[in-house]
Length: 132
Image (tube, rainbow, N blue to C red; front, side, top):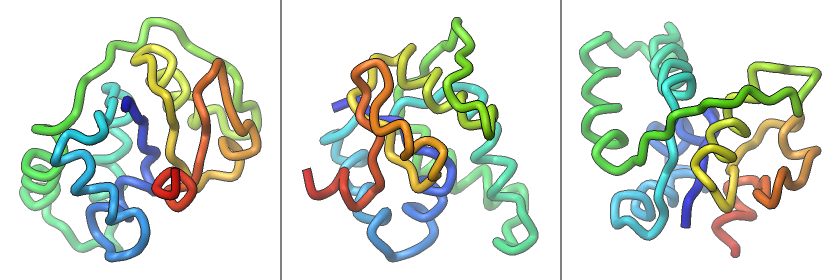
């Protein structure tokens, strides 16, 4: 199963013990394939350097290199989309999902959740995804 995880979902999965943390063993055991584009990786890295997390650049790099990158499939996005108008930055997740032929986009972002689905890709919260 091919899945795109938005930034809040990946941060919650890697750093906290809530619902999203149940995704980590799924990607590490290859029960799901997490799709990742360059733009999404850049956002993950940027957010992890926020002061509130108190990670050094080395710690951020280690976290991504050890807990995520060995388990993802990188996707080259060739077509830009404009499906989310209120927050165009969210389009990068749809672009990756479309380019990578994902079945699901897992997010807590209301602008994406409002779509419900996009080109056959279901857009779900982590909890709803895990319940499927």
